[in-house]
Amino acid sequence: MSKPMKATLLLAFAVGLFGAYRYGAAQESGSRRGIVPIPLPTFDVQVSQDPEAVATKHVLEATYINQGFYGAVVAAETLTPIDPQLTLVCPGTSGTCTIEADMWVQSNASSSDNAISVCLYVDGKATATGCPLTGETPADGAFAVTSFSQSVSGLAHGNHTVRTYYFTDQGAAVEFYCVNYRVYKP
Image (cartoon, rainbow, N blue to C red; front, side, top):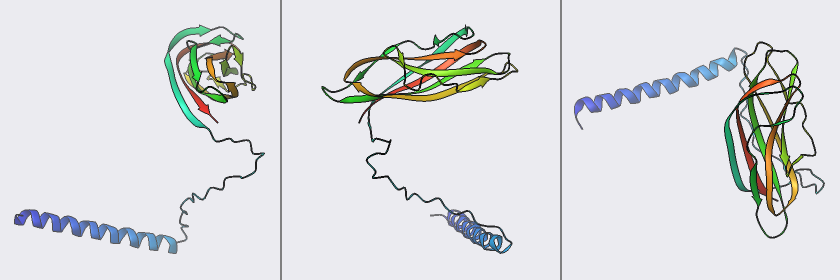
């Protein structure tokens, strides 16, 4: 190793050591001036052993990513399909599965208080939660992304169709959409 290389490495080590010293000194002096250090998060998560708990452990079987450009105006108070219908498979010869959808839809409108709903339909029917209002379009005509996540459990094994629907009170121009459909087995 050449002398200039040795000198460079020694200098880099000295700068790093000095920086570590200054960082430690700053940490000590900060707490003396009344600055309260932020505690590190703990990851000791307690999982309920209660058999009545709502959450059920599931295993991901498949993910279907459906995205594209819709590029049309959705009429006021009209439930409109946004993405192409997909057929998902609940695997196995027995038991049930859960289908979950994470849905994002970009839209804009020029009216205020224009409520939006994005919802999941499985086998031609809305989920048990229906299509709750999930956002509003901005009054200034800017684009906004509305997102929502819904799931349906207890579906029999075999094929099921899924589709995302969009609803707006006063009409809106829908641009892009992205929906991640997931199939889980309990």
